[in-house]
Length: 290
Image 1 (tube, helix red, strand yellow):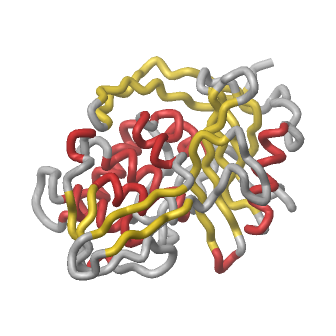
Image 2: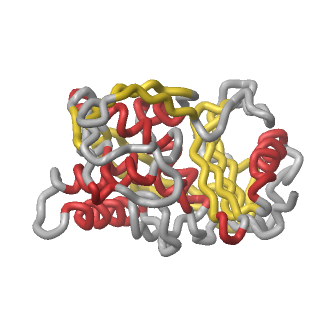
């Protein structure tokens, strides 16, 4: 396995950097972009709406990874979010953007309004080089850096963390093809490469060029929460081993003088996420002086 060309960042919730390499380089996020989709959607879909139902349309039938949704399926917001985050359903992600976009002010296509809102969120965080071109990450025009991904992970509300940390979810779907389905998380804590420290996670792959992405919230032995972003690691088959090595502290022993250290911004960003009004302190990474 090799992380020689990958972006890596492991940062604790208090801003202390434990691992860093090319963390500010925007990369193709693939399905890790769904974490931004989820965060943005939660500004409109409150806890009280999670039991409300939505309907899948033909527009949501995308290729790639899927929650195996069908036209006419009726399911709750809670189920739709799990279908987006666990099996990484591109169909579920498109439905989230299309339906939430219809709740946003403005004219024109509802899905495009949601994409605009995703990019506005990137601007509110102050992310340089960040681009959201879809809700699924199926295209290759979106860009996020490891810094962006870690900051996003640490800003997720408790419900989003719970969903992205669920290992399996049984969804009841009504409509013309009524059925019960079980979605399993693409990353298992007790899988072939054990990740027992994992709180929640999202993966993404660029199959045509054999690159993988991982975004993981994890707690260390002292209970300190960390965000880990691993973007464009090669080969895909080694991604969990790479994450395991970063968590174990075997890739980069420390941040060297001249490397990257956390620098807190004075501005704080206020977002309404679900039923919570959250104040998110943005961090950037700068060079060590001396």
